[in-house]
Image (cartoon, rainbow, N blue to C red; front, side, top):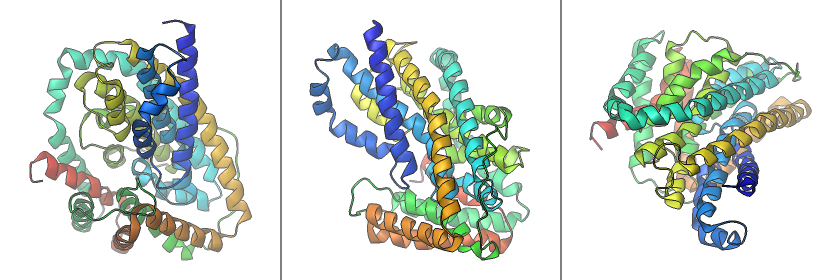
Amino acid sequence: MGPDIVLLVLSAGVIGAAIGTFTGMVPGIHVNTLAAMMLAAYPAIEDAMSGMTEPEYVPVLVSCCIMSASAVHSFVDFVPSAFIGAPDADEALSVLPAHRLLLQGEGMVAVRAAAVGSAVGASSALALAIPVQWALLHGASSVLDGLTLGILIVTVAVIVLGSDDRVASLILALVSGALGFAVMNCDIPCKGIVDGGTLLFPLLSGLFGIPPLLERTATPRIPEQVDRCEDPVGPWPGLKGVVTGCIAGWFPGITATAGASLASAVSKERDPAGFISLTASIGTVTSVFSVVTLSVSGSGRSGTSLVVKEIIGDGLAGFCSDAFILILFSIAAASALGYAITIAAGRLMSRIVDTVPAEPLADGALVLMSALVLLLTGPWGLAILAVSAFVGMLPQRFGVARVCLASCLLIPAIMTQTGIV
């Protein structure tokens, strides 16, 4: 493995960073969609790269590109969540604290907190990847496999019991869980004008993104955004998210949102910026650790890792394989770019918010989300968006935190683990 391979891996990381920036900044376009497109185009990519390097390195380089895109997506996807209210699955719970900061003129505080959290999460996950892989290969994986259902149940219980109104929180958790189950298991058509959409987009946008826009009458004006160009949180919130991110990266059914739900219920992190940093760290750690999980279990915990499995086969198996080290190296390079890209994207969105009056901006965000839902998921997606938005308005009416709505993902996962579905 010579320096030419290292340069190609770096190039793959940069290309992946560009892909992750695109998918992170465009609501509803997930990096999984682009990864699936790369899998479909892999024969053509393989032919195009045949003269650049040895054939055995081609699947490794494509995998580096895909996992780098996933890592940068986990950085950048916070920006549209903060400024537009269109959440990615991993950022759903951070919409509300980001919206509060936006209304205080501190949208860039939210962006910088997310960038710091993701950077801390990426650095920690990369540092832990090799020792964690060793531990999992030497018996830890069999111990952890039996804990999935218990962790899911404990997460829901902690969310409900930590609420100011446990009855209302339980009812809303069950309602959102039923809605999530219907979206994931009832074969609802998902046929938009553009292929590749997922019904999770209208589900999460309705539960977490639409309600703040509809509830904006109490704050009719978005103030001028100020960027103090300083770290608002430090490393500690991001470090607190590392353990939760490791859990979400290993256990099937426990997504980054589920991890954030548990962390928000047990953490003493009440500062909005701190919570945003915590949530961002969890999402990025989950993305990085999907490579570790794939190398140990041979099964993917995300759409991108499933595509990598199809491309690279058993190339990640074993302790510290060449492919494993090269993918981690590309993720490290892409993550460094991801931090800078997130700050730049936040500044761009801040200027847009400062230029456009609040009412047209909020109305435009509603129209944009509705149009994207129709484009990617069709009329049934619009119906799910409307129903989810109605459910998303209920926590405010009952005086409970919207975190209980994360059960839209948790309860279906519990039902899967128990064999009900």
